[in-house]
Image (cartoon, rainbow, N blue to C red; front, side, top):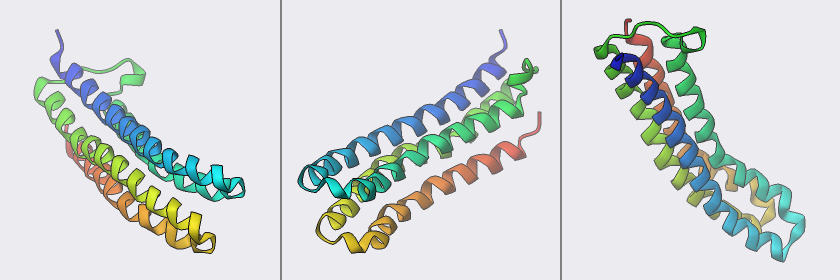
Length: 156
């Protein structure tokens, strides 16, 4: 049994899964507030939609991290022998992205709620409303960068 490639694939799966879960969680939180605002003023749908989309980026970052790991082990080309130690390294390299995407997705959803409530009262403050959840986005990007640097530095 080739535990190395299994661990590498598990790392890719963790990055993708946690990123998607963080995005789904954040979007669900923001959607609750958005539904209330749109019920009162359907004209604000477009502005609120932008705020709903922001927590969705963590899912994309998780996919990018997973894809990067898959490319490292040539999984799409049939795979290659991966020593156990390398598989373990790739698994751990996926964790900064996975954990950052999960946590930041949740908190970006909460920050999006603050922006949605701002738009409900002061639609002209759309730019400020976007900045609130965008600040949380920084940490998902840092998790992605950490994973990319770690995966890039691993020798197979």
